[in-house]
Amino acid sequence: MKILVSCSTGLGNFILKMPLLRFLAEKGELTIWYREEPWIEPLIELFDLKCSILKGNEVKDQEHEFDLVFLPFDSSPVEFEKILKKVRADRVIQHIPPRKGKRYYLNRILTRRQWIRILNGRHETELNLDLAREIFGSIPMPSPHPTLISRKIETLFNNSYIVIQPG
Image 1: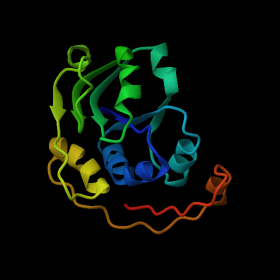
Image 2: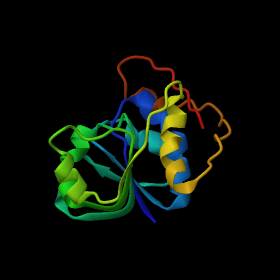
Image 3: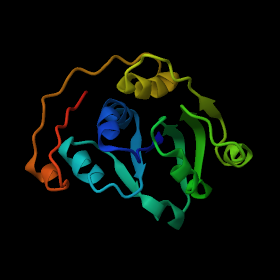
Image 4: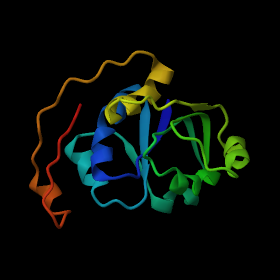
C-alpha cells in the first residue's frame, strides 16, 4: 500500500505527527511531502522513520500514484493543492475541507475523499491518529519512547529548542 502524508508544518507539529507516521510506515510504503523545512530530513533520520521524501515542487516532475493520502489539519493544504495535478489517489483522508472555489477541482483529482471531524478537546497527536483510525480501525496510543538529544539537530536552529517526542 502506497501512502502519502502532507507534513509541511512547524517543528512541534511535525513531532506530534510522529506516532501517525510510525504507524503508517508499518502499514505500507510511506512517503512524506513537505515544502522546504530544513529540519525534517534530520528528524526523520534521528527518529529512524522508514519513509520516502517528496520535497517542495519535486512532485511536479512526474506523476505519483498513492492508495491513501492523509492531510492532517496542520499540513499546509493550500501549498499541497499546488502539487495535486501530479498526484492520483484512491482515497484521501483529511481533517479540513479545501477553500471554497477549489472543491470541484480537488474532488475531480482526488476521488473517494473522506472528511474527518476535528473533535474538540483532543490532543493533536490523537487528532492525527484519528485519520488512520478511519481506515485501520482501533489504534492504541503508542508507548513513550526515550527522549533523544542530538547535537546534529541543534545546528539547524539559531535559538535553543526543547524537543519532546510523543510516541
